[in-house]
Image 1 (cartoon, rainbow, N blue to C red):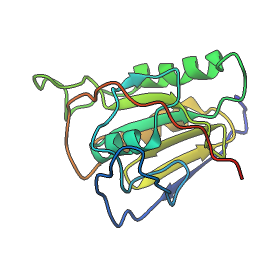
Image 2: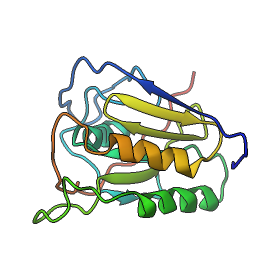
Image 3: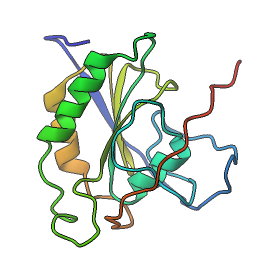
Image 4: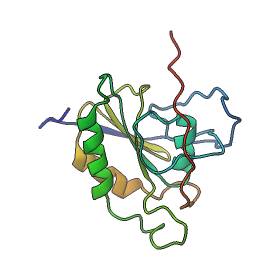
Length: 172
């Protein structure tokens, strides 16, 4: 997935509404990956997830100022090299200055998750902005995190609880 000619697309999106919806409520997002909108009342733990996190949960993380680093894995082995590279981005990211030092706060509002619904192999999302790429550009991802971490409409530094696996994609 790495390439000397790796290009990324960063797009800003209007997020006209945000609200909590009941569990298993069907939600369609205007962007892929989602960058805001309705979501569950719960949010997922920050850090690395090996199984896909339900988008309706990680959108709540974005509302709290998080950045989600995402990848589409089509390999039965779980794409360990891609996951490891995104974990490296998570480790190399600048400290989350808003949450740093707060009692009961997460050390960083970053999460890594596979997302089988992505149209590109690599993506990142923050509230109102997405990055999509056909290759893995760690420096572009670090710059995205640096610029967009902590820019959600709610400043919440508490970690989420668990997480719900993403439902299987609907067949056409």
